[in-house]
Image 1 (cartoon, rainbow, N blue to C red):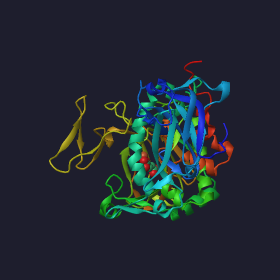
Image 2 (image 1 turned 30 degrees about the vertical axis):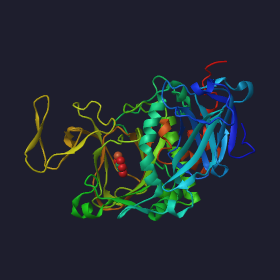
Image 3 (image 1 turned 90 degrees about the horizontal axis):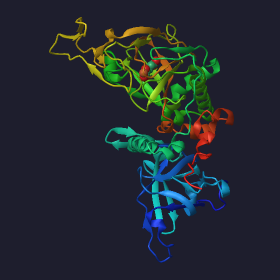
Image 4 (image 1 turned 135 degrees about the horizontal axis):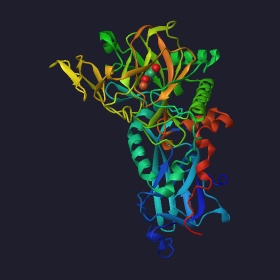
Length: 489
Ligand SMILES: O=C(O)CCC(=O)C(=O)O
Ligand SMILES: [Fe+2]
């Protein structure tokens, strides 16, 4: 279906068949009824201004009556907020009933209501009307209050995208999980069918590391290094990442996350970054065959978050897995500096799990410290052996580092990519000298979370050519085709 000539509103041959809809046809003087049974779910929490947003109108809870049947439905959006296009077939190809109404907002330009953007959507059929101000966090608006940090609390500076993301993100995950439980809606949220792996295909398991030399070419490295230097970083002072008084006071690990990367990156930088993201996805999805145990895995992963990292002497990262948020399944690091040349220390230790924690690393659980006072403390194993614990020592899932077996020690090399399952417990040793820089990706196993924190598909739409763009699922448009379930003919 093409873009309607009258921008802003579109109609569909479906009606909202709720209890109200079986009443006699509405007359103009009859007051409209508010529909409290529907909701709109959009794929993105963070939206790049003037790109595509895919959404659908769905029943709020399992068992609610909102089913769309043949008839007249009007879907409206103020013209200045974007162009509405329905994702259902037309004519005979259109099914008689739909459990939900999928649509896209092209050139989405929500009304800016700091710190979020809002799309003022209205769906109506006869007397029944559903109104929804769909909120999204915004990037690339060009409006100063959305692009510059503002003071959220005295002394606490943040970006609008971050403040809005903080408000919306948790609810998005909760609603997504609830909608995923409704079987007819699943194809709209997670259209990728499970990929069958050939039997005997290599399996990439917890504790293994895969590395690719020259993943970045010298010119690309140069461009990334210059970008890291321009990017506004936030410094971490936590004791999980800093060793020694100086680092605990000043912070020796700095991150420049996606929002700042996009702000400081040129068009060429963003194109390079999206290209490297597509390359990383291809590596994981086409070559690796990961055996993920932390979350459901349908045969592919999607980008969730990425950041430039910069470690100075004293910067480190205690033992941990990366599964603590966003259903992260795969971690991938690309180095911009070389161990021994640019920095000393800063090795990555990869651990195997002790038998006392069989599912260790899954869903990023407990990180605790041995108390500084009241010792001596010790860990008593089921076989009777006793391991003395040092005051202040970090424990992961109740076990000290010495209970984990070191499976690998990685010394970063400029241009090299290393991949491990996010459930693999790992640690960055304290940097001794120099400066250690990298780009780090976390990939999610849960397709609907891919545009939760960053508009990957919006940036792909803007900065990538069609071939590579198809690696990002939004651009493939799979959900729109044939996925509406045909309840009746
Ligand atoms: O910098 C690295 O090599 C690893 C960093 C890491 O494990 C993390 O940020 O979760
Ligand atoms: Fe990590």
